[in-house]
Image (cartoon, rainbow, N blue to C red; front, top):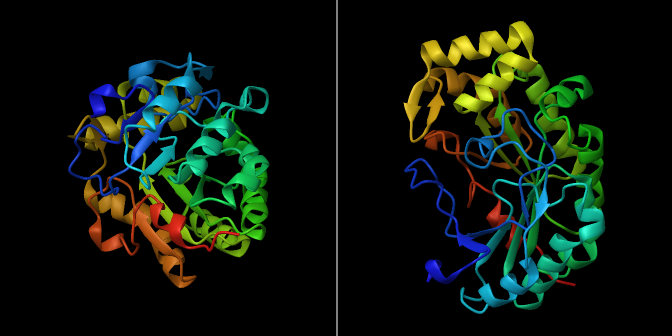
Length: 296
């Protein structure tokens, strides 16, 4: 069946045994991503490019939904953000979630953008949830590592607005990068702030290096970038296409996030870490949030 699909794909993160996501489909209205995050893994196979609308996207989507089972989880998006700046005019993502909602699919939005609030009228009347990525609350750090993305302040405000309208929201504290956003107090603060804003679920993971992203760190972050590069080259372990830090180091980096989520009664999980002891949720990716609300 998957061979006949053209824009919807069965989510399969390179057959990694560390992936604990439920069965779901991924959907990307755009190729590339204008947020230009320097840690992005997707650039290793598509290059660093701004968001480009897919040709014939809506027509191809309408065909694909006739193939996959009704009620399936469809995530927008797993590698390119579904709400880049051009979405405000293109409306491809809005049209996509309208179609998915009308045909009874469960919709999981993963984004760094406040633009998602625009579509609350659809989201609140469908089996949907939003996962917003917040790697830091520091504006200066965010500008360095996520230069094209909306500010952390705008993302926190988006959480509040969505929750106020009845849309379940979770947060990805992801990735945690040594020497950049790994301060335990700052990670604790992120979880406290998003819990106060109404987030229900936290997923977190460490930076998993690719050669091209390590190069960007070296070029853009000076001495800090060099420290990151040396750390991964000296201590990194190659696991399923990525350089991982040693497991004890990863546990240490993620512990403040997990401990604070537990303190505030949030469900929590890790992403492709193999740290099952840190997972306390019906799903790691936030899919379970799509069934938490009664439709209006």
